[in-house]
Amino acid sequence: MSRTNRPRRARGRSRVGEHFEVEVGPVAHGGHCVARLPEPASRVVFVRHALPGERVLVQITEGTEGDGFWRGDAVRIDAPSADRVAPPCPVAGPGLCGGCDFQHVAVPAQRDLKTSVVREQLVRLGRLPADSEVVTGLRVEAVPVPGRADDGLRWRTRQRYAVLPDGRPAMRAHRSHELVPLDDCLIAVDEARPPVSLPEGGAPRPSRDPVTHIVTAAGQVHDFTAAADGFWQVHPDAPRVLVEAVLDLLAPRPGERALDLYSGVGLFARFVGEATGARVVAVEAERTACQHARGNLSALKAAVVECGPTDRVLRTGYDEPFDLVVLDPPREGAKRAVVEQVVDRRPRAVAYVACDPAALGRDVAIFAEHDYELTAIRAFDLFPMTHHVECVALLTRTGPGAR
Ligand SMILES: C[S@@+](CC[C@H](N)C(=O)[O-])C[C@H]1O[C@@H](n2cnc3c(N)ncnc32)[C@H](O)[C@@H]1O
Image (cartoon, rainbow, N blue to C red; front, side, top):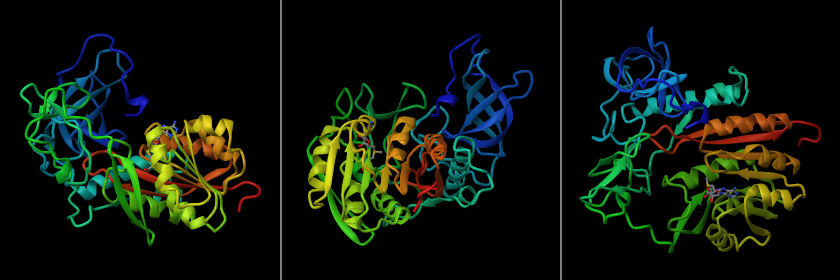
């Protein structure tokens, strides 16, 4: 959820529970659409469970007299969009499980919504011209789970459940502590489906024992050890898709030195280092992930794993030039301090892997201040049924000395 979409402070009389008939406007970042309430309420409302162009009855779920905008759920659809479908999940909908935003949307149309959101963030925050090829050419790509139909289901390899007092598994409602019991989670793979009952206090924490992931990408096969509860891409095909996108965009050349920032257990460092045969420095803050990265990268003679926050590691060392950078930060993005440390190393190309298009847009604008231009971007539907989308952006140096 972007910070700008959060109501600042409850002021004045609550309007929660009131109903309004509205025409639904465009999709916005965060899994909802924008609508304007009729007079006299006349307010922007972010509506969940709706689609652009629909006429719906909105029930206000958050909002007071003094708030600049409110939130609401579409609780009755008077004029449905052609893209509306019956949600496959019985606990998707107003007041129910908050995990999925787009169960009511046909899968190809979910990608159209995400395409609009990524484009909007690149224009609004990334300050790219709306008619630039990099914006107009963007399409969120399908990534069906290997061996499955492209139905947007059964892709989450890990899922955490809450537990009701009677032991039934549950998920939280949207922006709420309310628990919604469920028998199944349709986006979870079989191994991540809810158990019949759970001990009080929730699911036992996953073991910290290492697990091995085998990744076949770009004609190579590498295995990666990671903690069972540590970071690993959650969609089964994400490692391959993202590695191939990064390699395709960076086009690494033999001898090029590379930085893999926010490296986790070394996924990108392994493949990029293999392609360059040269120095690769992986930077990761989480200690266990660093230990695994050292093992995973041990076959690369010139690989180094540096454990610490990226900002501090780059502020205090590794100030030599690097040709290539992979950036794969958490949701909040790399932010100014890291972006400026990256451009200081004068890489010819940066592959930015981003799970929040708003953070990506903001950072693209910072790169542009330093003569790094967004020259290509791909976006992947690695989180179907939710509003989330993964992008891989290529930033290349345009100023003097660019190669
Ligand atoms: C989106 S994950 C990417 C991991 C890896 N690139 C992969 O695909 O497997 C982000 C990683 O950044 C790490 N991280 C979070 N904050 C960090 C920071 N300030 N500096 C370095 N690493 C950080 C997390 O522990 C996590 O491993």
